[in-house]
Length: 525
Image (tube, rainbow, N blue to C red; front, side, top):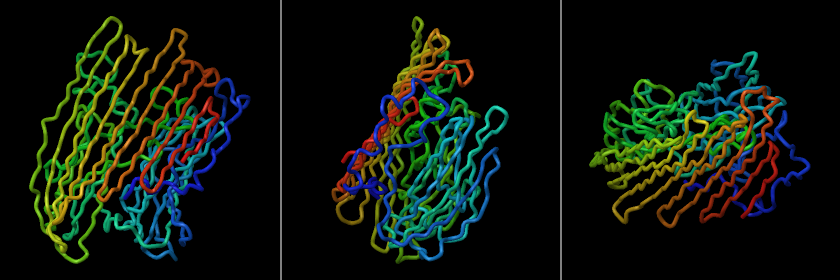
């Protein structure tokens, strides 16, 4: 599916400048007790015009603690059981004082959303998340258990109760060929049994470092003998691996998620969150080279691990969905894994002490090639997945960590080559994540955070298909430490520009804020 799927691409919808900019007189000198509701520059999900639609409520809950919401999903009536699009919408509201919280939504055990929440104003905020969940159509065709949790703490200090409603909207019509036939979960979280005619298999892993400990900020960890508050035996390099029957089947770079209290400064995120904060995207692994092995009718072990996490330390969550495409003309497909070749992992993390400043330079990476074939009703199909990871970073800090800075880049470069008798068809995806920022605390106890984040992807597909994504966030915020909330005298600016291009059109939206006021909402193309 094109990365442009889900974007609103009609020129008539993109003309104009969006919301008018706030006048200078409308921008307060500092943050007050209320600010603009959270908003992102990401595109809305495109939906088929004129198609019949049906809506189902998945969950309505008010989260005060760590008790999950549990309910039952029933398929929609009147829209059939095949849909051209299925859209999930989450509406939330909260007021008072509260930390950022992480959450998930499961339908029939399938994770359909992983999210985090914004931190509220005393007067209250509302926010919305949209996600294209058409790929989970198989799950939505039957009655299913629903479980949702946004773990929260409400007491005399943290008063914000998180009130959410999740809905699905179904659009009748013919589904795209990219929609899988089956969506599976791992039995007991460890074993997978696929249909015996599976010809393509993809694993989704919603990998997030969280929990408030050092693994939430894994990209800042250092190894001994460096003197820093967050330690990891091998430094900041993290790699999410998936194994099938103990054999390495996929590697990936985790996205450096920043939640809405991140980098010691919630004033950065009150209006514009970091990329992916409200809609955590799963890592995808093409396990098709292992389809022949998985098609033997027996259960197989599937294990996900995060390389680099100190032994015995928690902080990562990595639930797995398995997407399966079946051979419609054969009850059983056979095949074989023909190659699994991994480079030696590279991980150099060099500590350099200095006069008043300490530095760690990291240069790490890994490469994996897997190949296999399946004999299908339309002939032998060979799939080769080549994936190369790289991470470079420079981390600087001083005594007391009153200055703490990072400049980091991660690349995840994957080529999937499919051979089915004729010319090989290649899909190349290069993902690049960047993080460049610093936290400083002055002698007047004013904490300042300056941060730039980048989420970029370039995709080329067979027959001339391509897309380019560039989602860039910038923020600069300052407040006074160690005083009551109303005495922080916080100021801050933030901006986001989301650009998505392809042969079908483009989407380009810019947002900017100052002291919690939305000052720019501009749409181009």
